[in-house]
Length: 242
Length: 242
DNA sequence: TCGACTTTGTGCAAGCCTTCACAAAGTCAT
DNA sequence: ATGACTTTGTGAAGGCTTGCACAAAGTCGA
Image 1: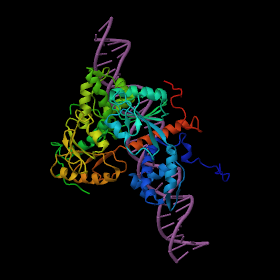
Image 2: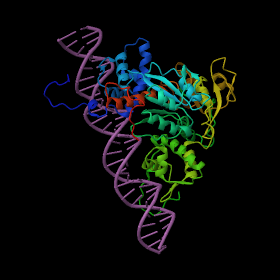
Image 3: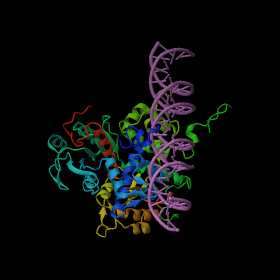
Image 4: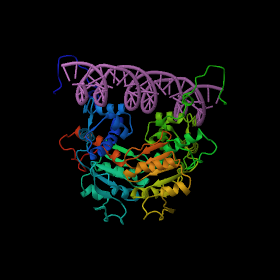
């Protein structure tokens, strides 16, 4: 719009070429950057260099810069990035300028822990409904909200954009189906197992056992390469560098 | 070993060429396959084709076969995979033939939820210690274990291979440092923020806000491409395919 | 035994992601 | 103003991951 300048044939910059905009791998890191920026803002720091911010986020500075370049040019060469401006740009890209209404389904230990987790508000999300199918739980107050059934939520509850599934594994698929039928198209699943949903629905799954098993693989690999015969030895009596 | 056959110059198969063995992306999916195999085993099903197992795990069959090929040749052409044998091979690759001792640090809502989560035992992990720094909590019984301090654990506790951090964010780095000093080299971190650890320590981080923000990005993208003016409209009154 | 059929295992090509190297564009002291 | 210095933004190279196409290797009925 205000960009055409000179008649020279100009190559379309990489930041614009990609149809959907931002590569998936970058999207996965934007929240890390935002998280790293918040404490800087709170400390009153107004400017940060890519090298420094990258260290805080746990990535390399070139990767940070490449990622940010997909959002546009918000840095100043020789200076760095304006903390507040950059945070605002990332928040906008992630769609956090509004608050997304969230429902948590399944109020076992995990569901309750999520309900009382403080990291929602102020980060772009608000829990607006809690759901369980246990008649002993429905109707009770949890964290200031009255627990309802899924049917009630669909029928007369508030509009919800994101569903969090914290039910036992056997119930997860049925819950997902009902959430989708309600029009919800973003699901965060804490139940182990794969959810089948229509293409237009986004699902992210977090499974404790999976994470531990990936850790175990690397742990075993490390131990096998040293002392194949007794992989569990070496707790607190092992020498540690660093 | 029993493979040399004929004098023809033979290309080293891909499954052997890679030094460390299994590619990282494959390691991340092996737990999914194992998880999909368990119900089959429980149902008494003894054989499964890659197409079917892939559907259960939520991946493509060619990817499943490529992944499994890194473990060796455990399928039978024209038939499929023996459920029990394959499960055993994956479990061995992931290091799940033994039980890894786990400590949970931080017994807030999340820590307690994790402590009471059933998905540990029988999947290769056992919680052997619970740690908190609140004097009101230390010494109490939680899930059959007496809560201790980190210092006590290092001093006189059981050997631990994997540490799970479920503390508030400000405490996480200090806890990680102490776990590392104890010799723990695998950490699963639920606190938001990046942990700095020595190279030989493996860290995986799970952050609720990050996951939700990634979902929000895609949700926003979907909504913007349809009705840019009012992104939150369309809950239960939206027409849904599928 | 043979031929039709099924399903695995894998070389290869295409695409995505990361890293490198460096030009571009700013600040700052003089 | 100018030159030294800092730091961003990005083309291009390299590596990793995925998906395709198909040969290899088995089953099964006749």
